Amino acid sequence: SLPRTARIAVIAGDGIGTEVIPAGIDVMHRAAGMDGCTLEFTEFPWGCEYYQRTGTMMSADALDILSDFDAIYLGAVGAPGVPDHVSVWELILPIRQRFDQYVNLRPMRLLQGVPGPLAGRSPADIDMVCIRENSEGEYSGLGGRMHRGTKHEVAEQTGLFTWRGIDRIARYAFELAQRRPRKLLASATKSNALQHSMVLWDEVVESVAADYTDVTCRKYHVDALAARMVTHPQTIDVIVSSNLFGDILTDLGAAISGSLGVAPGANINPERTHPSMFEPIHGSAPDIAGKGIANPIASIWAGALLLDHLGMTAAHDRMVRAIERVVGEGGPRTPDLGGTANTRDVAAAVTDALS
Ligand code: NAI
Ligand code: MG
Image 1 (cartoon, rainbow, N blue to C red):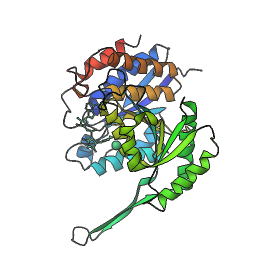
Image 2 (cartoon, rainbow, N blue to C red):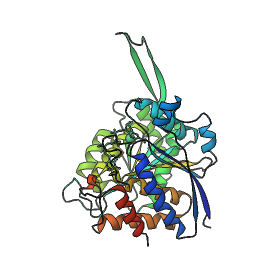
Image 3 (cartoon, rainbow, N blue to C red):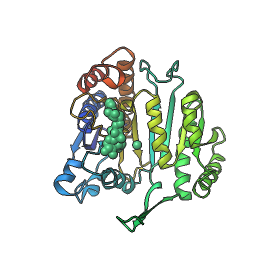
């Protein structure tokens, strides 16, 4: 049965986050309202401006507050003057880790009408999803620095890979691949050079594969996979990757899809014991912030993924179709897609295309 109301926490954050998230909220309201669903958005002022005022990225009880919501809708954090490791480690990573959002799902599709940078490619050739491990791996945060500020300074950054962490992300990816027509899974590895972590990765993925014999699974070294995404994108369907590898591959996938401005992401806690978080994959884009020209499509699409996660599948489908229609039928587009429209024009056109 359809949920009638959903309570959504909003952290618009910094830069263009504050421009694209309101656009997404408008479209979500309308799309969900068409099925009689009500969305209650509660905005929190957390981010770099908050940090500059208070010394912390979020209030001390932020995670407790967020835990009461059905989902979290995030723009982007990051501002000149605040080190990026502060904004990431004090806001994004605590949320992902505390709420065990161990799946980072990132669709990468070439939409009809978007000029792809790979000449001659069509939407059928570029339709990939990356399932990125989102709770451990290279972003475990383990390590340290010593002899700080001297010429003897050393830093150690340790990757942490667990059987359980790899097993659960691999299962999620195999299950997604099973539901897609091509049933292909590419595992991003680097077991030639990373002889401990990535060999365990390969072993666990292989053991999970035995439970999904209808999925064709191949492992690729991550560097070769990056090249393959450009040269043979039509051979890639679902990708499963570690945290760092997925971070890099999905910016590449967004570029192949035409722009970072159209690429959405979902941080999912599949067991639903905690809220999941939905965000565009781009950052706060200081170079264009304040100009009103950020592409809202990534945020609108992330909002669609949020509604899908809450069971509002019709609203999700309606939003994605509306995006496809605006982009594919010569609707307004922002400069990153070669147009002259602003954020508001595009959001309004998507809203109009809902019906
Ligand atoms: P970025 O994604 O903010 O920008 C990269 C390039 O893509 C820029 O030229 C920007 O103008 C363009 N771009 C991004 N989103 C766009 C959109 N919606 N429409 C049109 N053009 C768009 O990445 P960058 O420059 O590496 O980082 C800027 C700040 O954002 C940093 O402080 C960084 O730490 C932060 N960041 C935050 C993330 C998050 O909150 N999840 C993710 C990535 C970066
Ligand atoms: Mg990234």
